[in-house]
Length: 227
Image (cartoon, rainbow, N blue to C red):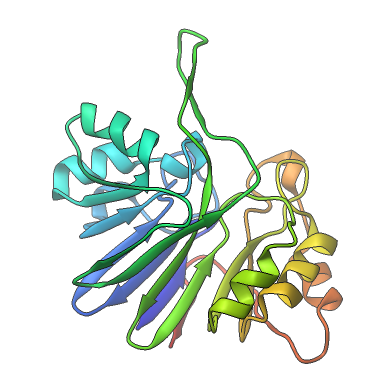
């Protein structure tokens, strides 16, 4: 399984001949190395409805006929836009031919804000557990620290965890370091930082806060790991 990071919260997974994009915020993301028109994912997984996570989902999914997996309200809304969706919800899991997807809690918000200054509620935000080839990836989405991360770590052997560190809207480095301990992941990667002024962070400060037995890795946009 190949897993790459592409700035902000964008993660790409290639497994079983399928390409999966998580939270494909590409257009308007100055940190990404991707171009939306060049991406051809089979599957898109969304953690919540904010624009910096839904991103280019509609344009990419319509062009590629990608399957969009998202929390129920967000999936329903996107189905009304003509997308092929699979709705799920927190605590639920589903076995697809490319792997198993399970949504976890995340403490945040989820809405689409329109040009007409309307806020359309998109249900509860989520994190994602993705399991394939005997490996488990945890993408925490946008979230505060919460103690049930311990249960996620106890119930699942997490090989790679993507944790937000930007603060202001999500956990900062200190809380994310504790989340790394709670999840007991074999490797943790900081995400959701530096994209906008309120979430400017030095990712090394997160790595320095990790306990000695935790393997922290700063991935630059385009960096890849194999599991």
